[in-house]
Length: 132
Length: 248
Image 1 (cartoon, rainbow over the protein chains, first blue to last red):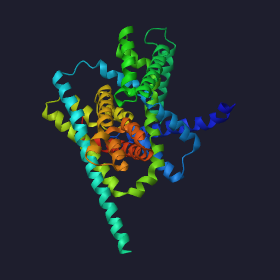
Image 2 (image 1 turned 90 degrees about the vertical axis):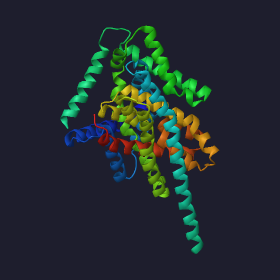
Image 3 (image 1 turned 45 degrees about the vertical axis):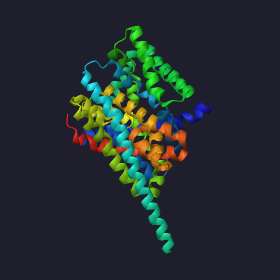
Image 4 (image 1 turned 30 degrees about the vertical axis):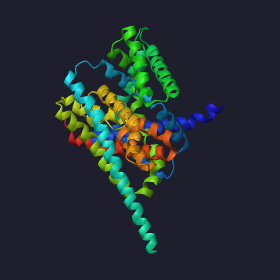
């Protein structure tokens, strides 16, 4: 019973996701943009939600389920990495080093910069309030 | 409008048509439950052990791979059998708009330091990786796969397709990057005396996307919210800018 009552709402949510996906792809194809269609669809939906002011309940519920199942949805693409045979061993070394060392370097730099910026913004605000 | 709609319908028709094929090891009725089972067991193991090294992306895909090798199913047949899941990739990217919308008020509050941090982080993450790979003589395939390393997988897959990269390599790089960030990130920052949870969360989201966000949620809800936000913004930004720089 509950399912039957909720179904129209969920179908509407799923329909909206699909419609914005297709709208994004269409826009990208029409304007020959070098951007993935679904990403444009996401931005269109974000814009529409900002204009609408809130997230429709059915859309929020469907999106939550989809995001929870993300790992399952891209599992087929992930499995492909074990089937890659045409990379040389030099490529693998470069890939591994870039992923491990590169990630740690960029992670550290991002955090240091952000920490600095937030602290500076914080002390500035404190100083301002002292003047007040 | 109607061309894309038609293409989608064709794809749907092919996926449904595959269900009517005679039952083999690569039939959707075998492959889809296999995917679901792999994902479910992977999730169970991850919840039990609690280590990001065994994130369901890793555990689940290893389980599925082991089964495919055991049954002698090749990758192309497996991909065809998984057609239904490929149809969901586009809507899944679109669904990322909802957490973005829900977190928009948080961004406005912290404002420009976050935006600047996002901009620099989103550029640094692929740049550092590509430079390292370039110095070690990585091929073009590897370099393209690395450019999407720090964005969430559905976006990375769409980007890989756009740039004519290898989707599965991109997916693997994204998963591995996320694991490196989630496993070593928080400890690294603690050693540097960075304990602001907003900073930790945001850095996790920019550099380690969804896997980092899961880890950030374990630290605190605030940390998780900032990570989710950074992940979404970084994905959108990268998707908009990257294809202009990488020409196939």
